[in-house]
Length: 326
Image (cartoon, helix red, strand yellow):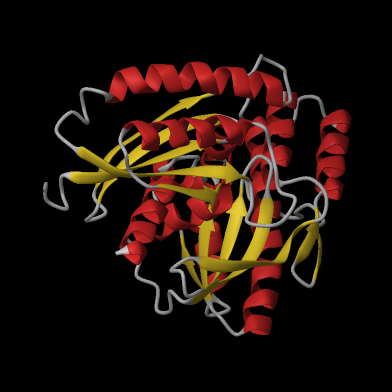
């Protein structure tokens, strides 16, 4: 029998825009975390599910070739894959079936247990890695990505997982969609987050009058922000791209501050974990952390490679399920 360090669990996540595989030792050391972004045509606003499924199948083949040599000295004792976007009834996207079935096949060939989780739980678990919350049994988690902007109350349950209750978020478009739509207007490639973030960080112009935001009891309406940006662009074709980017990122931060300050007080929990690709923004993490301190709210942002789509959280959930079985 190999040591806990040599026994590993494989995590697989096939989301809307990334194919991810991770291997974690039973000591929760990251052995590898590999990913391939799905290809989106220039000027396209997104990717059809059917195209995503096709690319995931191809990418899993490429990843398997890359990781075979890296894992030859390890023993796979479990596999865990994301089966759907969220841990709620009715949540479904075809792209996740690729990783789900690949995980089942891998577990069968290695004669080891297979576990299912969700994309959102995967994100939260990877974001918690190495974080020392004062209360890991109850906290708020924010999932900000291209398709999702949700604020959930996480309560630990008896199975070592979390019961996730949606208590806030957006009622229309997501933060990721806002960022990508602005990026498209500014002729950036999709996804546009890294370009908008870089612009906002480099902009030294002070925002005198920020964009108007609509936030009520933890829920946000973001379409008004997009309309304001479009109007500004129409009225001034030569407006600085960096300033436009900063205007948007500033509005996102202010929306989150209004939502979280209200929800933390309402639910009497003052720790917030951030997950999802948008949370990898250096502008957002820096400014949001500072502004939330005024409300005695502690913000936990993870490393960018764990904030964006990955399968590390899936592998961790697999390990915890193995330990529960023991």
